[in-house]
Structure formats: C-alpha cells, structure tokens
Amino acid sequence: MKRRVYLDHSATTPIDPRVVEAMLPYLTEKFGNPSSVHLFGQEARAAVDRARQLVAELIGAQPQELIFVSSGTEANNLAIRGIAERAAPYGRHIITSAIEHPSVRGVCQALEQRGWEVTRLPVGEDGLVRVEDVRAAIRPDTVLITIMLANNEIGTIQPIAEISHLVREERQRGHRHLWFHTDAVQAAGRMAINVAELGCDLLSLSGHKLYAPKGIGALYVRRGVQLAPQMLGGHQERDRRAGTEAVPLIVAFGKAAELARQELDARIERMRALRDRFERGVAERITDVVFNGHRERRLPHLSNISFRYIEGEGLLINLDLQGIAVSTGSACSSGTLEPSPVIRALGRDEELARGAVRFSLGKDTSEEDIDYVLEVLPQAVESLRRISPLYHRALGERAERSPSN
Image (cartoon, rainbow, N blue to C red; front, top):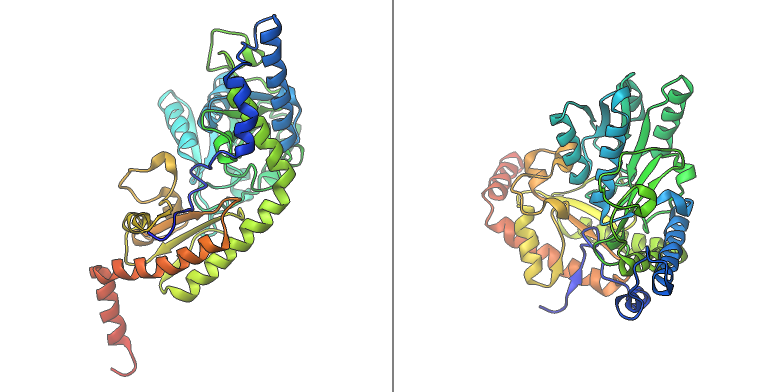
C-alpha cells in the first residue's frame, strides 16, 4: 500500500479541524442546557442561535425557518411524514422520483402501507426528471412532491426551480395544500443554494456531508408551512422537534456551514478540475466504461462509472486493499446484493448496474491522490477482467467479428 486515498466523500467527510476547535468548548466547560434560564443555559442558547444563523446563511433562509434534527434521514422523514399527516384531510397522493435516497424511498413506502398513493417518476438516461412528467402526475389530491436537488450516486442536479414554478402555478389555481420538498443533503457545500431561487417549501441538510460530525442535520421549513412533528415531549425547535438540542454538534454544523459558504467557489473549482482530470485518465486508460448521469448538470465532486465485465464490489475490495476508498452506491444501502436502483433507473442493464462504482472527491483531495488512483485503477480492472467469463466471452465474440476473420 503506497498511500491512502479517500474518494468516498459522498458517504461522509472528515471533520474539519476548524470545526473541531469550534465545538470543543461545548463538550467541556460550556455544557449548559439551552432551555435553562441561568447563565450556563443562556450561553448554550446563544451558541445554538448563532449556529442556526450560519446554517441559514448557507442556503439563503431565515434562522427561524430551520429545525435542527439528528441527520438528513430524520430531516427527510420529518418533511415527508410531517406534510403527509398534516395534509391528509386534503389528499393522500405523493409524487417522487425513481432515484431518491433510501430515506425518501423508505418513508414513501411506509406511507403507502398506511393508505397513501405514491407516484414514482422515471428519469432519462441522463438521470434527470422531466418537468412535464411532474406536471402530468399532479392530481387534485396531491399534497407533496419530493424530488432531490442532487443525486447521491450520480450527482445529477434536478430542475428544482422549474418544478417549484409548477407548484406555484397549481396554488394560484386553488391547489392550496400542495407542498414541495427537496433533499439537498448531497448538494450543500458543493453548489450554491438559495431557497428563494429554488422556490421549495422544505429542504433537508446533513452536517457530516460538509465536514461536520455525524449526528446533526437540519430541515428548512418555509415560513407559513405547517407540518406534524414526529418527535413529541418538549417545546424545542418551536414545538417542531422535541428533545434537548445537541449543542456541540449544532455549533459544529454552524461552523462547517460558515466555512462552506466562505470557501464554496474555491472548493467547486478545485474539485471539478480534479474530477475532470480523473475522468479523462479513466477514459484514456480503461476500455469498456460508461459514465453515468448528466455530463454537465451535476455536482463537481462526483464521478459514477460502470466497468463492464466486473462486479463493482470486487473492484471496491481490490482498491481498498491498495489504500483507495470508493463505494458502489449509497452508503445507507451498502451491504445489499441488489444492483443500484439508481443506475437501473437510467436504463442500464444489470451488468452495468452491478459494475458501477462511485468516486467522490473532497475539498482536500490532491493531484497526487488522483494520479495514484489512475495508476492503480487500470491494473485493478484488468486483474478482475482476467478472471471474468463475461470478459473472455466478449473477447471471443469480438475476434469472430474482426475483419481479419
């Protein structure tokens, strides 16, 4: 093992040392409960309020529109269940896409078992939802549309602003109980986000995707949107999410959001340049590869590639033995033997879906890291193909079709 290279930043990111420094006092001497009225409590309350302001600034929201939760998964659950249960008297129809994160797919399936109807929109080969499909799916009893801002496996950026425009048109026609949620967990810190420009009613965030610790997330809820709380027993978060606030994690999230906002342009430029360098190298060095998702409308840090004739899991293990960390899809569904439903939704066959690998760069990924991966990856692919019956059969078929024969 020559070096260790982490290319799985879509699964989680390392904590930025500046974030650790910001949160440490709230793990030690500043330990108060934000709900307490004494000085210790008010010190903690001020820290939570400051962090809320910083996270709000990252997405162009007002601080009072943010609910702190434990994760992006909880944010998605609160948004979808909260709207569905609150709006149930007006309708029980939800629209989503075929490539949502498991935390969205799972809660939609659970609601179906309780009597809601769910329409799952297909995507094109580029991974994009068609706005006209959204329009056609809206019914008088539709109460929620939930479509992610950027996909966690292929990085495709969906037309959220255009879908929001459809929702506003519906409301002007009298469809007052139709709401729009977007999962922005992968997008935050990797593209500019402004909730006013996006036009969404709810938006999910997660701290550990942008160099904060695991265990903290947030849900943006536009002022005036009412949802049924899922955690009961206290008045925290304006009665929307009961439970004593995790002050150290919230402070860390705030600092990470502040750094992401300040450094966003530089991070995007750096990651995009390295990703493009990586993809050029792969295309030059390895045959029979397919790049998944839209080639332009995508996040700057992510590359999803299908390698024909091999299993993605095998390649992952081979690379891991050489110090390179990648993934074969969503970290939340790792361990499953099924091919990625996201890749299958693009129209890829099962072979390509099983051979898909996600490479996701971070703000500190270096050129040397990319060069090392480009040195190791072709050898790893070749070694797996040498023992693949599919590969040898394909070589035989090509030989038979050769003009020399």
